[in-house]
Figure (cartoon, rainbow, N blue to C red):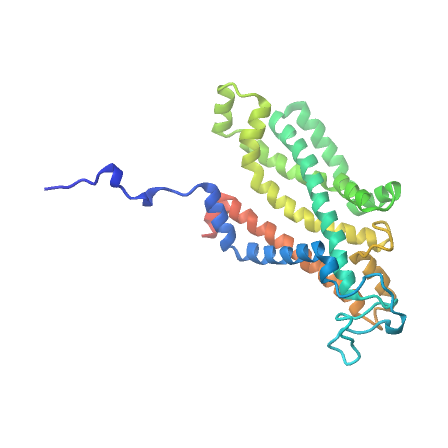
Length: 304
């Protein structure tokens, strides 16, 4: 005698989780995502709660305690845990407040470059033809210009300020999003589900927003996290040459520029902001690389 299991009693083991749930589980298991997210979270907390975390006013000058070493040196002072600069200002407080400028510039510049570059990429990759040729030639022309020189030139014209720094980075780095996302859009537009959407009579805008954009979203998220790190580096370069924020606003590039005059006498003044910048950029890069693997089904299957 054979027994059959009723369909209502069939186990749910065969039910597969949604792709989003699988991606989130993969992201949580990824060491790169965990480490990167931890670093980014610490930096964001420092930036948001700088007045509460910083032990001193970053612009307060103590001329009796100039060039103090960090507290673990014999001549160190616990009031200034990471020492002071040539004007007696607390280096730790400047690092914490400098994270504000770095993250604000990196984050909003990445948003601007992502929106501008992705919009052009979607139009170029989907429509093709003369639209693709015009945008591609514009990207080639723009990328032929040295990015650092172009950023400095734009800042000379715009003037200093956080908003102008963000605008200059957006105008330089939108091409990265445009070129990479365009290539992916050209692949996705040939998929069967896009052809089916056209046969059903969907409009071009609906197909781009509802069918193509979700398919390239993992790539866009990865590029965004990487662009934040690039924006932080560019801001440090501009502040190093005095073309970023005003002199009374703490920034990591300004700290490096001021510390280079006494780098042999007090090397911690130039080493510490460089370490802060490297760790922050590394955190965003690890987060972006981990998300790329976690959100892309093809790469996720390879990593298993």
